[in-house]
Amino acid sequence: MSKPDTPDQPRGEPGRRLHLVPDPDPTAEPGFTTGTSSPDELHRDRAGDPHPDTPDLPPDPETEQRAWAEIGRARSELPDRDETMFATYLGSVVRDLAPTSEADPANILASLLAATGVYLGPRPHIRAGDDRHPLLIWPLVIGRTSIGRKGAGYSAAKRLLTAADAEFVAANIHSGLTSGEGLAQVFSDDEDDGATGPDETTGTGKTGKPSRARLLPPGDRRLLAFEPEWANVMARMRREGNTLSATLRGAWEGGNLSTLGVNARIVRDTHVGILTHITPGEFKAKVSGSDLAGGTYNRFLPVFVAQTQFLPAGTGASPELLEHLGNDLRTRLDIGARLGQLTFTHDAAYAWRRLYVEFGGHSTDDGPIEQFLSRAAPNCLRVAGIHAALDGTPHIHPEHLAAAAAFIRYAVASARAIFTAASPQRAKLARFIAEAGAQGRARTEISRDCFGGNESKTDIDAWLDQLIERGEITKDIQRPAGGKGGRAKETYIATDAS
Image 1 (tube, rainbow, N blue to C red):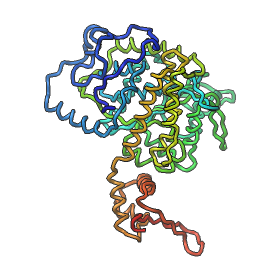
Image 2: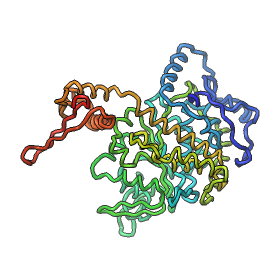
Image 3: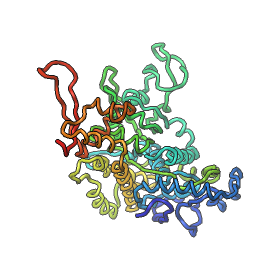
Image 4: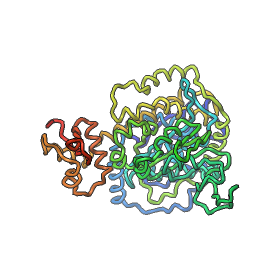
């Protein structure tokens, strides 16, 4: 185990990878490059001269020292990481892209897993008992504002995906999740079913009503929902009557989506991936115990990330590198998309028995960490399936499982790091309630006197839920006397005082 700074790791077993284009020099030292040098140094022998747009800046030791200190503080919050997660084909791609980006390699890998899982479509799948699992991965990329470099990781992955298939990026990646009905509407085949896109009207449907351009290509049910402001989506899901959370739970299973309301709708054969960005503070504040217990968030894989290097004049991966990697990726995606059910090799089946116990949800603890762990086993299978499909094989090998397991362990460790980190506002609230003794604090007192009306109801409710789950406070509800109408009084009491 190591801190995710400058890892070395093997390339995996060559005999089980497709060799569609020449690999880089096998004698070269593997690993992620850090530092302030030109981001194209890695590719001099492959692409000729360094990228001409990268200026040669004079040294600035004071600025660099300050930047590296900030990066070091941010990365000290991250959990340890097993570099085996990069010991596959996608890992080799990340190794090529990482020196050209300030993004965390785990961020780039998570973005590529989400996107390639959607691109592969519904044909390649894994069976776990009677359940059919599509190769859909939903990373929840968590990083602090600016220093997290969440957007940089997606940008690096997106440029590669564009080099592989620009039409897919333009037509199948969209943002703007609002409701279950809205998600189902994206897949509508009925021209008169209402507007689903931002474009101007493109004509009239069968009833003469205006129709709008489709979001997805006709007959294509693959959608990657990229949500860079997931906190806003979380707030919408908490609104009364919003069906997005329930619809997402169905989307993770793959296949049919249904919304049974006034405008009932059933959409068949969908293939929906989600890639989200959020800060640690927003995540802890907006995810309540009821959200976790409801089963929506245990379908996501938290990935805690931070900036890895200081590249003030970086211009990203060179066009030559992107073309080289993009051609290889496109061929692998096309081959993998034609696969069907994926199965284990003999050695992988033996390895999976141990991982099944590790990730099988056998813990007796019902805390927030265990909620994320509850679907770790099927998520591990899905990640391993993506690695196998990109190697063009219908068989999951031990190295595919090993890389997948390392990624899942990092997701669980990310959740643990975020939920166990100290929250100043939550600690302030706990002290305020404890100071009242057995009398406790009314809900209105908390908002007015503890926070001066400067914190939102959603955030305060989340902190209260977290304190209750941690056993630090209890909640007392007093109904109006005599059974009369009126609002019940909520009082929060410190556990030690009750």
